Length: 236
Length: 250
Image 1 (tube, rainbow over the protein chains, first blue to last red):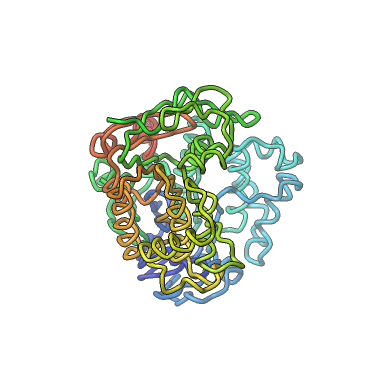
Image 2: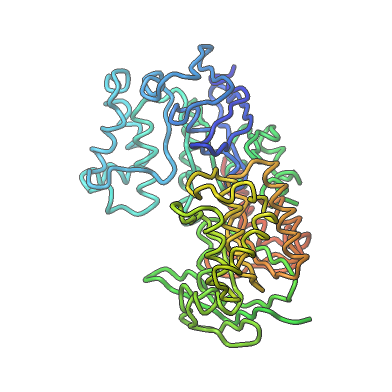
C-alpha cells in the first residue's frame, strides 16, 4: 500500500517553474529514493509534498486523504516530516534542545521519551554530546542531529533531502547504515540523494527525475546498472 | 588551429578552501567548451579567474597569445572577453536598449553612444529583444533577462564569451531557443565557454567538455567520451565500491 500518492504535481519559485509533472507513490514501510542531477526538481518535489511550496497543479494524497493544499504545520502533525537540505539546525542551541524542537506537536510530545531513546540508540554520539551547541559539531554529527530531530517528530513518513551532501565517505556510509536500520524498524522513508549509487544500494524502490519530471521508476537494484541513469545525470 | 585561451596550472585558494588546483587547458578559436562539475566544484571561480575578477595564486592565463595573468576585468573586456552571470545582473532602472548599449560602450570596441545604439539595435534583434527595446530591464521575465544578459555581452563584440548557466530556470522550449542562439553566436566566429547543469543541452552543443571536481580537473574531451569516463561517472553518481559495501552488509 502506498502511504503517499503524488500525482502530476507542478511547482516552482516565483515565475520559474521547476516541476513539470512528478508522480510517485512511496510504499508503506519501504525506503524510496528520488535521484537525478542538479536542478531536476527533487528538492522542489519534497518541498511541495511538505507544503513549503504550493502545488500549482496535481494532487497529493496521504493515507487516502487529499492534502494537496494542507498547510505544512498540519502535515507535520499528520506525521509528514522533512529533514531539510543543509540540515538547518538551531546552531546556538544544544543537541538536546534541537531534538526537543522536533517534538513540538501534540502527537510527538506524548511520545517524547520513547523517541529520544530511539535517537540516542541510533546515534550514541548525540547522547554523549547532548549539552553541546549544535553549531560546534562536525558536518556528519550535524546531519545526525537533523535526522534525529526529524525522528523526534514521530514521523509516519520521513523525507530526507540530501543525506550525504558535503560529508566524507565514511560518515556518509554510517548515515546510510542508520537509514537502513530505520527502514528495518518499519519506518517509511523518502530520500533525495545526490549519491545515486549509495541511494540505490539502500533503497527498495527509486524514481529517476529528469527535467522536472519523474522519468523512470523501478526496484532500486534493477536501476543500478541502467544506462538511462547515467544519461539522466550526464545528458548522453 | 589558433589558441584563443591558454590556462596553465592555475590555482586559487580562499582561506582553507582550495577552490582551484592546477587547472590547465587550451581553447581553440571557434570552439564551444562545456564546463561541468558537481555543485561547488569551482566552475564559477574558474570563470572569475579567467576574466580577472580573481588573480590566480599560481599559474598563468594567456588570452590571444598575451599573458593576461593579473589583468583586471575591464582590461579583459577591452581585449575582447565578455561574460554573463549566473544570477542575472541587469541595470533595472535602464531600458533594455540602454543596457545593451552599456555592453558596447565598455567592451572590445569602446564605442560612443551613437554607434552603441546602432549595435544595440542589431544585437537586440538577434537576441529576440527588439520588441522590448524601450521597456525597463527590471520588468522583463526570467527568460528575457537571460537573453538581455547575453545581448549585453554580445554588444561588446567579444572574441571569447563566457556563459554562466544561461539555461537555468528556462522552460524546455526556451532552452531549445537559447541553444539555437548559442550555436548562431559560434557560427559568427565567437569562441564560447559555458557552464551548465542542463546536461542534455551542454552535451549536444559543446565541441569539448571539461570536468571539474573539488577544484581539480578530472576529465577533458569529446562529450561522448567524457560521459563514459569512470571518474566523471563517479563524480556524478557516487562511488560504486562504497555502494557495494553497503549492499554486502545489508
